[in-house]
Length: 117
Length: 109
Image (cartoon, rainbow over all chains, first blue to last red; front, side, top):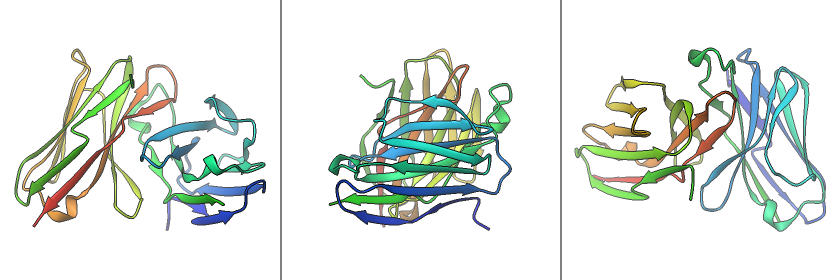
């Protein structure tokens, strides 16, 4: 069973469209993350949710909106897609307690390659 | 300047060589992760360290908190170790992770 699963794996779309990427984890973790990996392979955190509440919101355009219907899911919705949004987006999860280092290992999904034409 | 710096950026070695990848950081951290990204793009978490040393198979990770430095070593390297190795630090007190730019390792048979 896949621990952290993202869909779709590949997403090709036109500029200006609205799209969503879904993420689900079956590890019972409390915290989920979205990362963007640019063309230079640099990973950058975008959002983090703990028990459905937003706890990290890095400087990303308002066109990006995370939605967490429950603690096993963190979806990423992107409005008015732009060429610069082309990247690989990774979802991850961790047990997430800052008081317990043993629970802080992050488990990553396989990534979603988004291409905006 | 990045809060997390890795060196070297690229490393090519012959099969069997001992490999060292370095990571230096400039912020207070509660833990440091080493990740491996395969050529196909998938990311695997290798280690999470807060002090000392950890070993898993041919991989060894060490951290020196005072010097704000960590190293990832690979013994008896093999072509299947070819990947990008990424260091990431967890900021003290929150869930934020900051990543290094990665080290691309190529092991030649």
